[in-house]
Structure formats: C-alpha cells, structure tokens
Image (tube, rainbow, N blue to C red; front, top):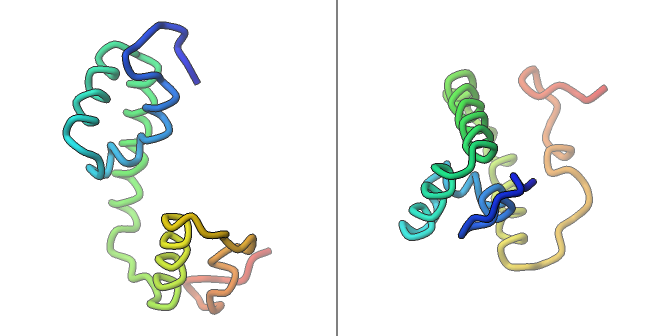
Length: 107
C-alpha cells in the first residue's frame, strides 16, 4: 500500500513493521521515523489506529486465557526457525495441538 505521496519512510516499510512498532520491539530511532510518517500519512495512520484497536480488543477478550504449554513451545519453535532463516514446515502449527473443549477439531 502506498498513499502516493513522497515520504522519508515509505508506506510499505511502515506497514511491514507495524506490529513491531505496536509491540515496542524496535529501536527508538525507528519509532521516531514511524511517528513522523503517521503525522504525514493519513492512510497509514488509519491502519495503525485499526491495528492498535484490534490488538487492544484481543488483549481484553483473550488476555487471561491460558495457552497450552505444548502449543506455546511449537509456536516459539516456529518463530525461532523463521528468525534463524531456516525452512519452516508447511503444516499449521496448531494442527498438531490436542483437541479439547478450548481447541475443538476443525470443520
């Protein structure tokens, strides 16, 4: 996505790293660039606001749910594979999770 206007930081870069910004997982210098961009670019500011609202809603509705230990381990393992640049299995991580009342079988 691009708003069509020139910016020091491109819209695509901002949107590609939006969750890092939302989760405070980027250096202060990058945060400053993003904040400047949001001040100049209404489409990206709207996208930021929407994603921020969704994140707050999920936290409010699901923030107290316990995650099964084995599922957490599988997800963290997949994240580590991605970070290390290794091949990631094609199957869904959650597909191997046990079927329970909180995790019903798909379909």
